[in-house]
Structures are given as C-alpha cells and as structure tokens.
Image (cartoon, rainbow, N blue to C red; front, top):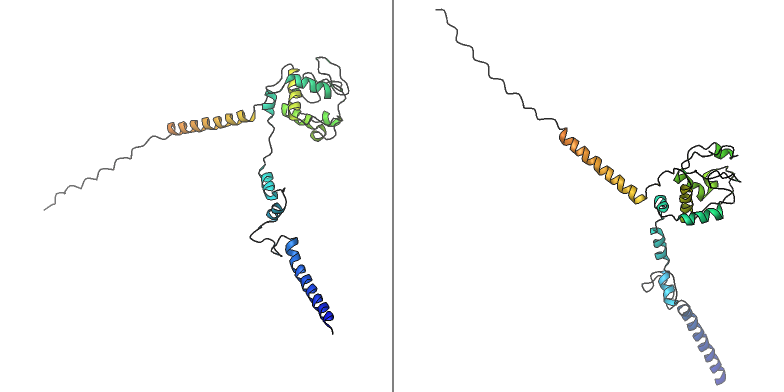
Length: 244
C-alpha cells in the first residue's frame, strides 16, 4: 500500500472522529449546554429556562396564585338604589321595556301589563291581564330584591314565564330601572339598607343586647343571705340532790 492509501485511511479515521465528537456536542448546543440536566441548579423550573432563552415569558405559577386569591364582588342592591340615576332609569326603560309595557298611571296594558304602582304590589295584580300560569300561581309581592332577580334574568327567576326578555345584565342599569319604577309607585317601600349600614346596625344591636344582659345580671344577682347563727350549746343538766 502506498503513501497515498495511508493518507486516505488516516483522513477517513480523522473525519469519523470529528463526526462522533460533533454528535456528542449536539445535545449541548440544542438544549443550552445542560446535556440532559433538565431541572439542574441553574434552571430549577421550566419557566426559568424559558425566560433565560426568550425575551418574553409568563410566570404561570404567579398567575395561578393571583387567580386563586381573587374574590368575587358582591352586588350591594341597597347602595346601588341610593346612587341610582332616575334619568338613566327612564332611558333604559324606554329602550328595553317600553316596547311591551307602559308605566303611566292608568296606562293601557300592552304585550306586558302596565307597570305603574308595581313596587311592593302583589305579583300578577293587574285585573284582566292574561298572565302566564307560572306568574299567576307564584304569589308574593314585588320587593326590590325580587325585581332585581326578575330583571336580571326572567327565565331563570321564573320557569315557564311567557316573558321573552333576556334581562338587564348590567347592575347599574338594572338598579336605575328599579329606582325609576319606585318613582312611579304611589307609596313605594323604602330602599333596602346598604350592606355596610346593615352590618353596622347589626353589630350595634348585638352590643346593646350584651350591655342590657350585663346590667340585668348585676341587678338580678341574689342578695347575700347571712348564714344562721350556730345554736347555743345546750345547758348542762343541774346536779340533782341525792337522797342520803
């Protein structure tokens, strides 16, 4: 074998060695130099690894914890009614209710009954109007809370109602319409107390009750009764004369 043949063999061996070295380094190049050390001390989490390679990333764990700590807001009907804008209520009523209802005193019934003097009145109270069987048999009065539930979603409030209305989903709009209906009621009941005021009154009532109980306990304590004096010792019998 000549020198040319030996050079070819040596070149082939060198190329093979270089190829093997390249294959060994490929995982390090592709996966950031860890070579299978996923979760090593340098990148403890997948989020850290992603943030080290991309300019924009999302901390998934933090987003999840923030969602878990979120508290649903409770609708305060009493406060909403006190802050309601009657002009807004009239406008919403005209756009969403006036197609089927009138609200003027002595107004005619349409697809729905006249709504004047409704707040606090019995349900299905308009004589001669053809209410659905579900409404006619429901009973009770139109309180502010009932009107709020009804106007939010009539079909969910009363199964079988013939009122085909999706409801007023925005709380301020619904409260404004209820306040407008109260303004068109001859003697409307007072608005419900806002939650904060109701809670304060409840606490004050509990404190007053506690004070009365405490005072009653002091006045009602039984008077101390003196223990009866110890009986005097019985006199010793006198010496009887002895007959001699």
